Length: 501
Image (cartoon, rainbow, N blue to C red; front, top):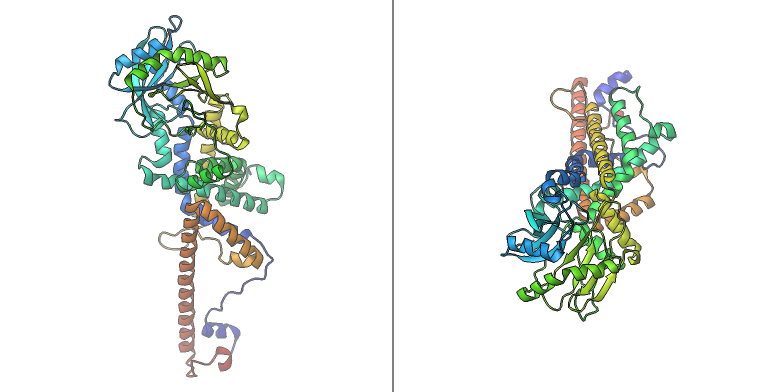
């Protein structure tokens, strides 16, 4: 019997696995593919909202110009008078702090505790320093004192206005962004070792190769920025953020805070994240507040004498045993933020914290937060983050275009692009498998959403692999039966094909 007729009877033979050398590429390619396809929507949403958040400080300045700036009509009145003017506007609320006008033409921001507002929010009354008249009031959020538009964009980026459950989306995106970026770097370096091809766009490429080139080269150029955004974003996340905080505490990398209790050496904790704070309720003593409002100018003078100047926020204590805290606010191109606590009744300096004395990790954390928020280098910082967001969005879109163009074009119905071949784990050494498993467990514990979603991916992949193998065996069995029936052979079905020939 001829060879073609034998193949017709026996059915298709199982594919042979080529003998190849050890390589991480198949495994990383499959992980990069599935993580990109399934998680890119979350990353794309975070990218778009993050691009808006990057330019939010500039948007804020434009939208609220009438609140933030006035025509300079003369020298500023004492801050005490400005606070009392604001209190006359809101006698129902307790004054908490003041941000005196830093430059001519700026307004003074008097901050009140307002129980009707949400967590970490206060009400700001904006006062013309030259006339001590109110120009309006707005709620502000966090230690950055963000105004409503920036707060709305911040909450969109952080949890899509869905509250605490919505934060899972941004944490999932931040958890996988660095993995996808590092995987893409490895794959592109493996594909093109020529430096010119690594970093330059191929304008002559067409079709899927053009999308591949844009996806790879674009990813190379922005990879460092993506890893930075992922790392800093995780510090604000729910689950990984707690682990980061615990790690910083264990290594004494936490941000120092001045002691705020008169007669105590214990430093009070304050929020320096730019995302929260000012939510602690303190006992209110009306006479103490009035006395402290009258002391604010002398307190600010003492702070300036100790080098705490420029744009500052001064707290107004509500109890006799609490000190004033004057802290420099985060401003563009200002690389350090000092703070001081002062006993207002005696003018005694209780404690000082100069940025130069902070641990290096605390400094890096503060700079990283400001860089992520687009406030460290002003408009330059914001434009760089916006460009990064646009580039990342284009890389994601090109990735989906590659996947779509990979689909079988001759199939009927809606089809998807083919995934990379299975079996990547068998292409690395057993020792590498052990190391990979240990690393995956450690990273998955520290970044819980990464670990849980990775387990889910593996479980789905195993199930799909089992289904595919079952279908292949069924198809081979059907082909065998058809070939056997077509041959008219009445031989024992338990005999092999070779036995029957």
